[in-house]
Length: 221
Image (cartoon, rainbow, N blue to C red):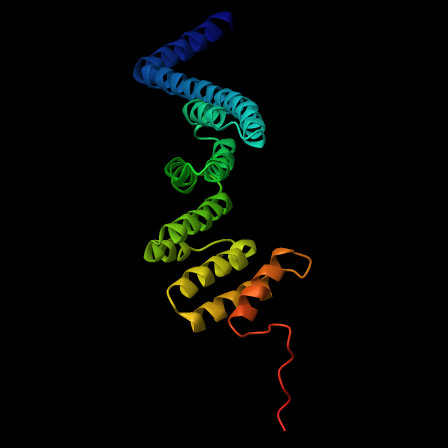
């Protein structure tokens, strides 16, 4: 019996050797590849987490600099945030924060660059939409009305549509298209909740164009 089992074992070993000789190299490469993918995934997760922590710290510094109106510090931290964590959501938020501080300091070229970063490289579409609406405001102030309207043509999340409509009304009014401006302002007014303070500003714009959005339509006889 021992001899019989020895022969079977030897045959199995021989088959295993033949199988390994034929497929062993492929199996080794497959296993190595899977281990490499796993290691790369873990490395990516670590890198992403590290980037997020670093970006959060820089964003906090940027916020403090903006509150203090320290524009040179805003520039420096914003530059660091782009260089060290430019692919993070915090970088996109930082772009909007930096742009606002730079506009207040009348550094419009740098503000445009920050907003363009948020538009082009942002990970959050809602923040990109906010950046486009704000950029349209800069184009409006510069008299670039066609450029402003092109920015406002892009789709935005529903919550931002009243703000886009209001900005579109500003541009159309500047172009002398008062009828279209009234329609845009009315869309904005209807889209904003009564509790939103800015709604009163939109209402004032409508009043200036001869429209009272609160008036009830006259009943037909």
